[in-house]
Length: 154
Image (cartoon, helix red, strand yellow):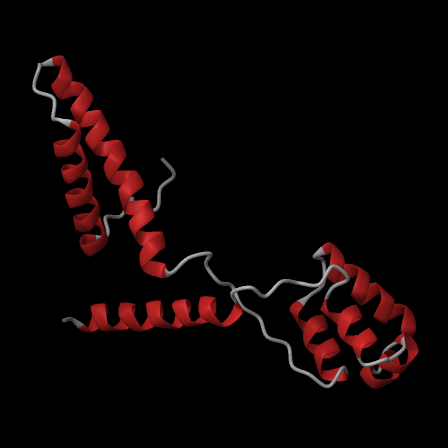
């Protein structure tokens, strides 16, 4: 196993661990700032004082969070003022290997279907079983060798 393969496996493990950690975690309808502030029975002015900003800035931050316009720095500041920490993550909907397999199958199916249509014109088409075997074989090869156009939209 090469160093490149080892590093890729380590990244996959990290990404899959992140997915496992936050699966089922949903942002509350009011956003995290307002939800935690209310759970702590903390008023806007009290949070403002702890954060060293105006109460209007607190309500603006809560609104910005709900609208998706808050900055990471603002979230960090609010988390600390609430007595917590801000955790930022981007996670996939599925395990890394599942995402790779789905993309490889999509690519392979397009290639094999195009080739099959040309072969059909010459009465050399593959059976449905042979077509699926070829799609799976090509997908596995794509995952191992990752062609430059692997992530292109098909």
